[in-house]
Length: 314
Image 1: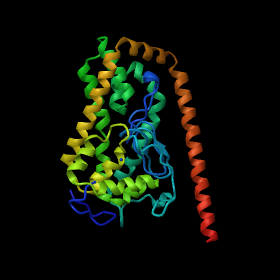
Image 2: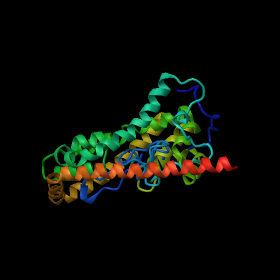
Image 3: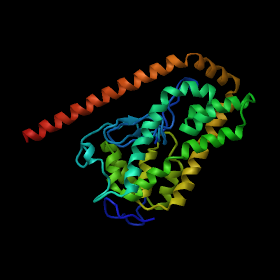
Image 4: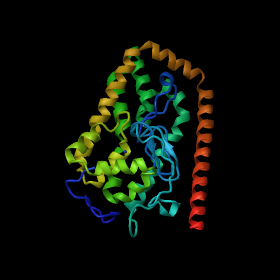
């Protein structure tokens, strides 16, 4: 599957190539899990693919987990090469194809979807944990569903299957974005100097080591979103990427489900308590997200004004 819309020269075949999971809240209380990576500037958004906070598209702020623990918190830094306006959020060169437009829309919609699901988690973890697993791949949902399986209310195989699908369903989008646009999309997702250094290190890895990195990309402390993008940019074959991604999703799902199953009735009791206060928990989450977004937006605007002032003086 080749593309004419690459944003840089193709990488050498031997130069291989982070969506994060937010830390689970108090014993399954609507914690953000698997934050989805958002393009730089969006910042990391809670609750999407990956592990730990993930960088969001420029201008959105940082998410907590897509994907990957190290992606935590990516604010717009305005460094050279970083997109600064909506018009700059075009990772392709030349005229965009329909695939380009749909793919870029999905890249922005995925983090927004996980963020929008946050207020619903306290309700769903108590009443529809399997559906919550399918929709978000949240670790808290897997723990809760596995606890219900322990007391005989849900089949354990369905808990594992739903968690696995929920985690893995969007990861390939980021591989495809890296495959089509190369460093054009990586410039959008790397909003800090640290992330840019990480990308440079990933690009120099041998292909076998990059495969292993994808296979652990959802583990805590690993910048999954950036790894998926670099895997595509370095032309890792799709079947290889999916194999490695399925390995990491299954390992994490089984591990988290085992934790919930071992907790059993104790976790169910906590979840039922959360359900009684779900409305208030959801309101707190909504207010918290609004305040957090406002603070990040204010900081980004202040940085942009400072940089404009420096350029004017220079």
